[in-house]
Image (cartoon, rainbow over all chains, first blue to last red; front, side, top):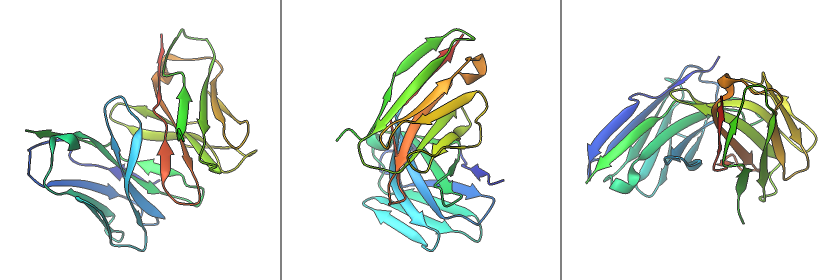
Length: 112
Length: 111
């Protein structure tokens, strides 16, 4: 059974510092990996999606890498801002029907 | 264009009561999903529907039923609520692209 782990569970950084969030998965047979953002009391918003054949994906200050063979993905957020404070979740697509297996998330606080 | 909408936003039930959580999407997506989110456990898939007229079980289907009423709507029913079903429930949809779009969630408390 695929298991997805995110460490650490919580992270606090000063504004301007680069954020590095980790995601690991146990089965390398994935279709893709997605990073989501969740604000308190809200739904999830997709940030980046990396196909299994890709090594990385970029959007603005966000960059996500994928190493399928080692079962790891990293989300980098450059020059963090207080508005980046949220919980970040990663999820792997495990079959053709679109089923996702989620990690528990990393709660990020960016202090001014 | 509202995306994915869910009703109600919040509900309190007593053990044994029933209720239906409603979800609708206006993006003409074929696939829809129901997840639950519990503290420290991430989201877990309850049921999904790959297309209108089809549904299938996810990781934690026990105690739930679903109906894909039409392409837009996918409802989740709790026939006899239990305290273990206290959670936040999210509906999501997916089109031809891979990204899943999530609703704002329903917070359910079962006493």
